[in-house]
Image (tube, rainbow, N blue to C red; front, side, top):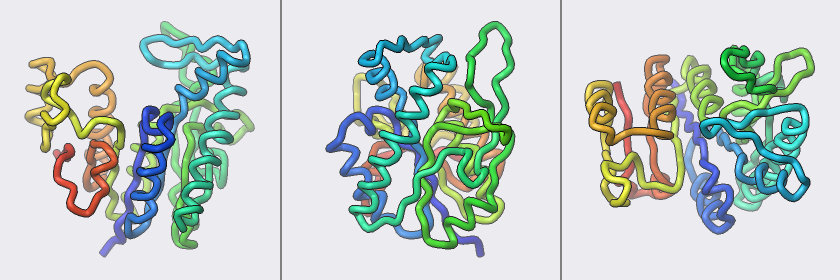
Amino acid sequence: MKQKLSIIKIGGNIIEDQDYLSQFLKLFAQLEGRKILVHGGGKRATDLGKRLGIESKMVEGRRITDAQSLELVVMVYAGLVNKNIVAQLQANNSNAIGLSGADANTVIAVKRPVNKLDFGFVGDIVDVNAGSISVLLNAEFVPVFCALTHDTKGQLFNTNADTIASEVAIAMSQAYDTTLYYCFEKKGVLRSVTDEDSVIQKINRENYQKLKQDKIVADGMLPKLDNCFHALNKEVQRVCIGDISMFEPEAQLFTTITL
């Protein structure tokens, strides 16, 4: 029987709220079994960039990462945000180790091809080194990945944290019974954006199409759910979306996605 593994990606609004982040990290540290945390930090990078006079260039919510912006996100993601999270997990008796995709050659990417738009130093993942990650898990470390990958030739890339979480979950599912969690400030996928309790508790491939047709699921939730179904199609066992209450012992109100 495969060991259970939880892979959790936290959203930017959790990272930006120190009290909320502390609550989440306490719950995360108490989770039983092997676990991996994945985070971004785009809002923090944008704020620091303003203070440093570095303008953030965004197209449809995606960051254009030129050489100067890459330096900024490396500082923020792998440094400021990652080490703050690792330190807080250590304070909660969770032996965390902070990583980018370059560390232990864990997440390998190529530069996103230029089509209509050149995203700059943005990476598309081509491989995840499950063996290296398993070595860390077997040594009872808790890997904490930031949103950076590399190309094995010395180049770092800014990479979507949702995608890193999904691809790591897919790679680890060969050896583990893997559950992928997307944790953000909402209780789940909402039927009505004006009703915080209107959580759609179960979404499968069939009703997802209807939710899209009826415009109940739209905008930024679409790529997140597409990532979820991609992971399920590649043998990830379960995908859940919700706020930090998902990790409380009696949790009930969140969204579970299945095929």
